[in-house]
Structures are given as structure tokens and as C-alpha cells.
Image 1 (cartoon, protein in one colour):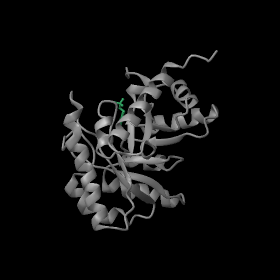
Image 2 (cartoon, rainbow, N blue to C red):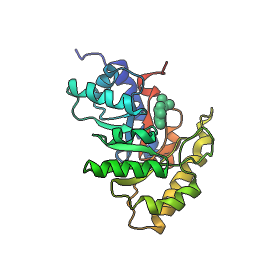
Image 3 (cartoon, protein in one colour):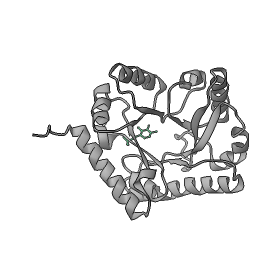
Image 4 (cartoon, rainbow, N blue to C red):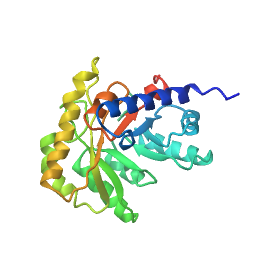
Length: 236
Ligand SMILES: *Cc1c(COP(=O)(O)O)cnc(C)c1O
């Protein structure tokens, strides 16, 4: 008899099914959307359960917790994980972000980009990053304003230690996910405008959409969705 699926495996499968349905409905290939399972505050056993169910991309929002999980995963032999740092990096911690990470999603200031580039160059590597844009303009949110982004992107693409692969945003937390659509659409439009004016920039990625709003984000072009509670349960 088949072993009963863990609760995490079941929730993961449900999220994957929802991604597939909405992608097809929007006329998109589901394989062009990467599910980043956000394991922040959850124990490594939760990561292990999702990994056993085939999940490979995991996200953490704090650099310390990310490094801790990377070590724990290594001990457990979860060797195929691609780790994503989805939260902002403080300027004195950019050195910690030079590590075995697939993608840094939330580079939110010129100073951080410059320091990351400097630290990566010193270590002889190039970091894959996304630039976080504060589309909604909420004071509590990190990121470049769209105007700032348009102004400094040209300078940021010349930094040798980072490779910019696209943009990231966080939508406001609202009851009705439909309300987030203009935010996601604006991020996509901003990216499209920037690459149209700079055809050499290869910015394929839009990291947008969380548990409450990932379906709308996929309809608006998300290539990376960052989903925590729908997979691992509510955080305490
Ligand atoms: C926590 C977090 C998520 C996941 O949030 P859920 O609502 O649990 O899916 C996504 N992105 C960032 C930046 C986060 O900090």
C-alpha cells in the first residue's frame, strides 16, 4: 500500500495544481513559472517533507535563517535545493549574501547593489539578483520607486558583481486578491518598458505573488511565485 502523503506534500500538490490551472487559463506554459516554497520560521523537517515530494526551490526572507537552513539541508543530504533569499539585505550583511544562493529577490537600494557587487567581485563570483520595486508606494514596503528604478537601472546594470535578471514586488495585503492586479501589471509594464528601451538587458523574471494573490500574479506574468503558508501552514 502506498504510504500516505504528508500534509505538506498534499498542500504542495494542491498549490502546484492551482498554478497549472491558472497558467493554462492565462495561455501560459506552467513550466515557465517557478514555485518558490517559502520555509521561513518553519523547521528543516518541513523543508525535508517538501523536498521528498519533489520541491527544489526554497525561499527564506532573513539571511541568518537562510544560512542556517542551508547548513541543515546539507547535513540531511538535500543536495538539489536552489535557495532563494526573498527578503531585503541590510548593508552590513551583504557579505553574507555572497553564497550558494540561486537568486537574491529583494535588492532594494543602489547602496545594497553596489555593496553586493563589491563583495561578490572580491569573492570572484557574480550574483543573480532581482530589483525590488515598491509599486504600491506604501511607506512600510521596501524597494525602488518606479521613477527611481527607471533612473538608476542604467547604472546598476554596469555593476560587475551582480547580474540583474528582472524585478520583484510585494503587493499590499488585501482581502480581495483582485485588488492587487494593478500592482502586478505595473511591475510587468515597468520591466517591459525598461527592456524595450535597453534591448541588451536580459530581464526575464518577475517575482510576484504570494499565498493570497499568486493566481492574479500569474495572470499578470509572474515567473516566480513565493508561497509559504499555503504549503507549510500559517506561521505562528
Ligand atoms: C513570507 C513571504 C512570502 C510568503 O508569504 P505567504 O503569504 O506565506 O505565502 C513571500 N514573499 C516574501 C518576501 C515573504 O517575506
